[in-house]
Amino acid sequence: MNSEYSAQNIQVLKGLEAVRKRPGMYIGTTGIDGLHHLVFEVVDNSVDEAMQGHCDTILVVLEGNDVVRVEDNGRGIPVDLHPTEGVSALELVMTRLHAGGKFDKKSYKVSGGLHGVGVSVVNALSEWCEAIIHMDGKIYTQRYRIGVPESPTREAGETSRQGTVIRFKADTSIFETTTYNFDALSNRLRELAFLNKGLKITIRDERLSTPKVHDFKFDGGVKSFVEYLNENKTVLYKDPIFIEGTRDGVEVECAIQYNDGFNEIMFSFVNDINTREGGTHLVGFKSALTRTLNEYLKKSKQAKKLEESLSGDDVREGLTAVLSVKVPNPQFEGQTKGKLGNSEVKGIVESLVNEHLELFLDQHPDVINNILEKSVLAAKARIAARQARDATRRKNMMDSAGLPGKLADCSEKDPALCELFIVEGDSAGGSAKMGRNRRYQAILSLFGKMLNVEKTRIEKVVTNEKLQPIIASIGGGAGNDFNVSKIRYHKIIIMADADVDGSHIRTLLLTFFYRYMTELIERGHVYLAMPPLYKVTYERKSFFAYDDAEKDRILTESGKDPEKVAVQRYKGLGEMNADELCDTTMDPAQRNIIQVHLDDAVEAERIFSTLMGEHVAPRREFIEANALAVTNLDV
Image (cartoon, rainbow, N blue to C red; front, side, top):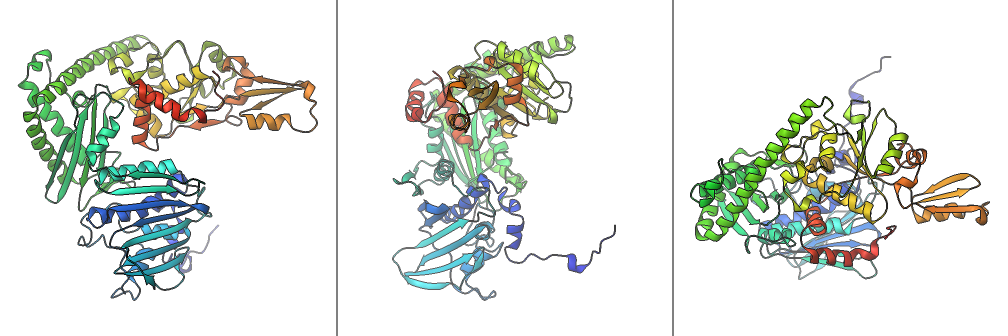
């Protein structure tokens, strides 16, 4: 069938229409992350003012009715008439894509955000938005509805303040939710305060009868950031090593501190943007650290204990570091700005880190001795782990299947269609094997107490008899050898009892995945099964409830004789027969499962360290603070 295609079919989107037509192109998603992105875009403008030295206070307020207010004491968005556009500069900034003061590199030497589209995108995706500018003793305002000005910029009184106030209400027809998460916003604002020393950022939740307030201000900058990350760890030396310098217009800040743990904690930023995928700045830092420590190793007594050079992994065991660079013209790879591509930044960071690190270590021989001792032990553990992996590979080559005996595999070979249930206990594992769909569902039964990987090195992990079946079944390796493209199942579902032991199993498995198969979580491959809590039986018919509210609803349904109703509270998965387990927990058409997300890497790091680390006091404080929020947990 032919259809006419001519000039009249070409649609031209004017102003901010393109943003409303394709919001995902500008903010990534219309879910909760995209909603929060609106707040961060406005805040980023205020932070840019702080980077230039014009702002030292930012306030974020969550008002009632899902309204957000962001205030700063910066210079204020200009309100004078633009020489060529015929409207105020404020109106241009708020209503035109790619209009702003960040392109000429005079008003802003460096900036984050979305490079000139940020606040206009917020305006476009809001039911209404208003800008209030305090400048030169006067107040100027303009209000917008769905990105369109209701009237020209106007003068609205006198003031002794200076700065910008942006209020907006996200459009409920665009977003899946317009309810903001205070903690998620708070964590990002804390991060920004760390990266801009001396900047005070306050977030206040006025949706509560008693407003909740967090104040963030860190005069130590990235040094304070590293101390925060190491708060619940035993450090090898008291004060973080601090490196700071500028070369060819690129500003570099870095803080380094080692702890006695086995995990690497490394966060890198470019113009306050978290570069989760790294980039040239991180490559430069890692190269400098490895080369510098190997040079010191050659001159130390530790060299006799090792027959080969330290690898990058060796020198980063127990390392906590934050690297922040300010680049005038950053070139990011990909839409998400997750990776820096500027080739010149690698050499700048490498030379600055090398010079400053050598200067510090020359003056602190005790520090370098502690670091080298730990790095050499890490190298020995790496060699032992390599030998263990080689032995495992040789064993697997002799075994045609190469898969653990506890695994009941599926027949489907496309990983995207396959599910692996990791089941606690042989009894539940037996029911799961009988109730599964053998075509695409595999079952791996766990047995005995699992290893807490937070307290041990890689060689203990890869040789552990409880973890080896999991590593072999998933198929992507573990640790630095992990390759997510080689996993055998795209859904890995943890199925454990709804009691203390089951929660412990889930936590141990999540700790293992987070530390040694991080991309499993980042790519959304890890899930938690949600078996029912209750079975309600009435006249030989069974009803399943996943929480107390659902149980009460079933019990109060009309027509049920209370004397004929039996309620069973499940203590474990093993109490269900194969059909019940399949229908309630495994069948995609009826089950409930929770996808595990890694929304905030900084907070995830702290939570795992607190709950699974060596120190008892922080764990006790966490339990005391959160105990009342726990429901449906048998003791």
